[in-house]
Image (cartoon, one colour):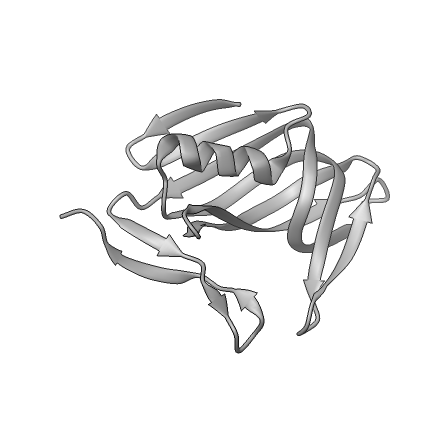
Length: 145
């Protein structure tokens, strides 16, 4: 992974073979990020797995062929002391159609370019919300003056 930082923004370039969620989780651990938004991401994925929440569980769609990562967005929070990366993506297929959903997994094909906007003075949490059966984002209080 390559990265450049400007104040609270990071531009990342993930390399071929990196697992998207693992790489972003490792990045958050290494940089100490406890709260961030992922407003943009483009590139290519292989072995992408997307989910659709049906109210009880994720219905998984796996795409083994390479796909264009057309759009990526989400957040980074903490859950049980470790980074929790929540992403949604739109993927372009070889026939120029798109498929989208909650990112369950995927390996970077050629590269992925991702913008991460951190919030250094706060911590986000992702506790289980029993009403919906999912861990949901909780915007936390300031952690630094």
